[in-house]
Image 1 (cartoon, rainbow, N blue to C red):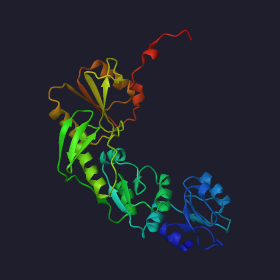
Image 2: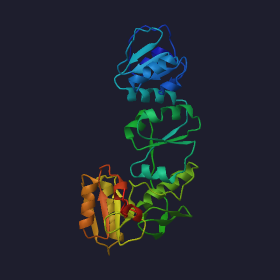
Image 3: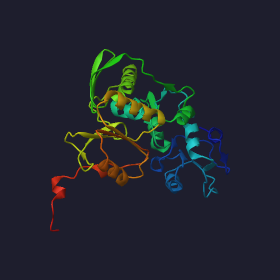
Image 4: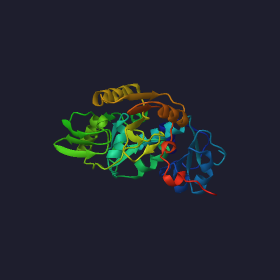
Length: 319
């Protein structure tokens, strides 16, 4: 790729008159740079390493020491956007399908779909998966919960919907037996997530992906726990259950409440929203009377705080 093409693609500004006029590959990990590569700098401290490894060009927000005319110094306003522009250019000749999965569909799919060389979940920063998608020719499908990201990479990102015929054969807050697409699936998730699970099943069959039916859900997605009298999470079945719903949106929260009210009419249900920290929440759980507590919060709670102390932990010690 010529330097002039790189400058145009990233909407950048060439700060010098380099002796070289083209680059070979594009790298964002300075340690993997080889002679002739273009280095996209997310961290200024990595530039020296990239240069020592033979970088012919550097894309950065505020590049330093631009007097070295053996290197093309390209200044950009936003490194993340520039990396996305370059990635889209590199993918023009590849037949990759991009899908938009809303939450909690995105997080649920990461648990239910087995890892596959043809599938890549696009999350966090582009820094974490740029090289995965550029260097892995096996990737055919990319999934993200970030609309902006998908629109930057593809002119036609797709969405999935649940139009499969399904029915719940057996259910509880902790697991369900789901009949979908003429097959039975025993999943260790609540039937609250039935429609999402069914959509993922259909998607997996269409794209020849395998399901991980034994997957335990992450604590962020309608994860249910038994509570003991001290508001601690216990492995022993008890009369009180807490559900942590960290992926909160007004629509999803409303659906969760309606689900509990419909399926557990006998239960005293407590809805908790807006707790600032684990200590405040634990006090509420201790003092309140409930059968099921739904905790909806965007706070980064650590569930280890609610873990039950083992008998050994409670024993007195001389030391």
